[in-house]
Image (tube, rainbow, N blue to C red; front, side, top):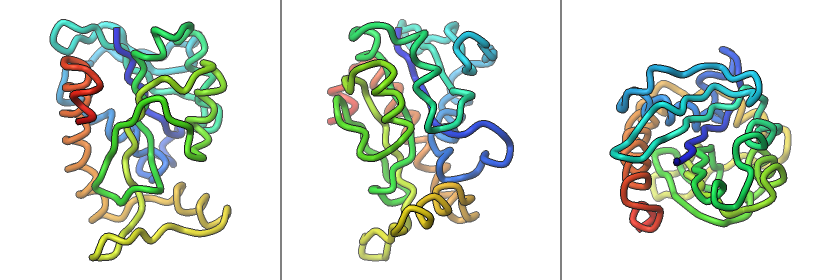
Length: 193
């Protein structure tokens, strides 16, 4: 079984914020594939479904109902060993990538992302796949315009996407969805290549 998880914050006020880009991308994946049976699992503290299939592979979708920095709490009951960790795919926002881009990585550090740090601490390994979705604006030449300073970063990631950014995000979400399908059916190496 593959575990596809989207990081973000619960609640309507966070729906279209940059920090919830993982959830936005997962929703595109859910719409493209038939995962109509999501339920809130009190034990997992997450919205989840283990009935879905992509090809022949069973897929469990996880959308933690904890706040971002405590995401790991939702993974402890599910990811109990290294094999399950290697089948985990976490979709999250990344300030080091421009909006409209995404990157797949495996067995990497958190890169300072507190939600990812929480998961690494909870499951005691970095050996899982991350789909990092860019949220930073960039100049026409591609230079990132990231916020500087802790307060500026917090305000930025909790800020809502502009209308034009949401259009870009919809396009990249379709690409992320296709990459997830490839990862599930053909393997991590193929999706990363």
